[in-house]
Image: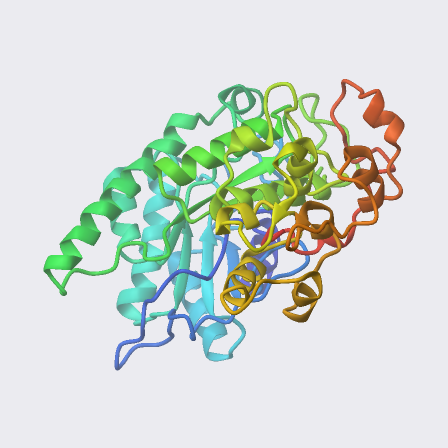
Length: 434
């Protein structure tokens, strides 16, 4: 098989992994090397489904010993298979970089023969790029669960970011859909790398000669909609990953129905709105001071697809509102739907000069489409409707059927319900800023 055909097969096989990002690394070029992964050296843009298009994103191989129900590359599928050698990947990466096609590499692989064999090939590829080609550009490596810690540690010393994909948020789902995997083999290397990162950072403070160790940190991916796991389970797990393992990002990938399997849901398109709501909730966890238990609970385990998570939280906690703009803390301002970090900081800076009136908010660029229902300026409430849940819900989403609000159904909202249509809030899903 020629290189062009391999590239076609293995680039297509890699497109379902969204856990790649080219931010967070400050690896700079040496005087005689190629490439640069510093902030100015990586030009990354995103497609509408969130995939980074500035990286060469390929698999080493799609020949897999596992038979995960949701995966196109499962061993029981009759699909074209291909295998790159480390030398071929290194040569393609450098050739594409010199042609300005790419700014870096995202390298993953199916499990060939066993975990260690696959990880050794990935490590060999990275070593070729760094040591033989002197490539200092961005490299994101997909780690192989179950591989030896020595291989993982050596790879982490050469790449900018590494990810071990959790895929499914519960052990029960893994056993059902990915019987060859277990959560321990995924979480153990993540914990090991977190510990080693702490040690390496301490060593760098005492010695400038110590090299980089995954300067872009770790990320992971969870598939949304392939299993019965709830949004509450998913964001709880994400919260623990951020707090305990210090992950840089958790990516959420709406399940794409590429296989037919009795253990998989019968759907015809990915649950993209649900994916968007999880990204928005993720943003609230990381930057807005929210906790998972505030957003959802066991009685309400899934997000309302009609409203973003912060708006839905506000509607369920109206006793917290209205918030007085001239007195509220940064934390309180960030609880107002429609106010993001930049808007909150603008308000804090502007009120240092004088007390703000409603018109002042417009002048400093505050978007009040949602916020107007949840705030006051100098004690004045400017919304034309009362601070009442049903009225605000109807204003924010005129198409919503409030009979469902009065008589809630037991089943989870799904993409099959016609009323759950994308709004303008769908567009910033990957940033999540609300």
